[in-house]
Image 1 (cartoon, rainbow, N blue to C red):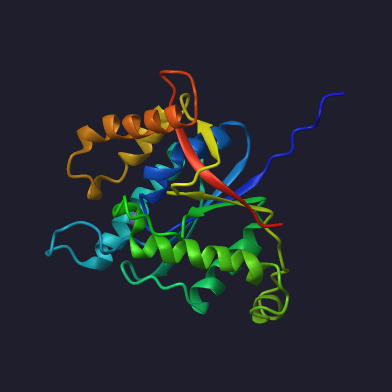
Image 2: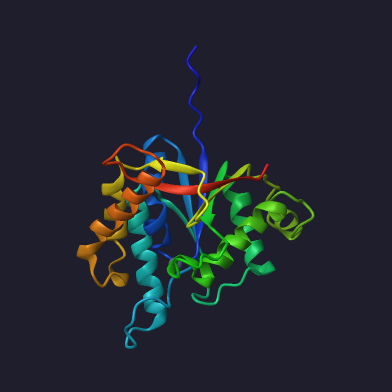
Length: 239
Ligand SMILES: [Zn+2]
């Protein structure tokens, strides 16, 4: 008998608009293409991005939310949560943990994708303090906050959000990957998604090559056939 297809719900949590498009959008496109539901949660609105002092930061936040929404659509994602924490000042404190735990209880994902909380000494940009804090807070929100009915009891008592256990987390930006996802069929979509972040790209023409180069390196590291593209993650069992 044919096994019945069960669509998964995946929640991707990242610090800034564009993080997911640099990092994981190829895999997202694979999943949405297969009929799974992917939801984005952005901790900040990216208002510290760009270098134009004449542009009010509130305006930049609006632009970046629009860009992220368009990029998400390109890879099949139409549900987005923007938490509005200050860009450049994200701290893995109880306020952020509660905000992420709330989204986890609302979305009730089978899988969470987030940024690695571990600093890499070989890659400055992937270890932006907001990324590390987002990864740390998300892991804490998964265990124990979202699953423990006594954590942030007001989530249940005032908002009716029942506890939820996330069984697995996929960390991006890690130097200890244990899975490589073949994105050869979706690299085009990934490039198109990244190009939606116009306000952040000084040299958009170089992005296509850059993403393909990174994805080729990942594919090679993962032992995929020559010509393949990949994204890599560390899967953490959180059952
Ligand atoms: Zn970032």
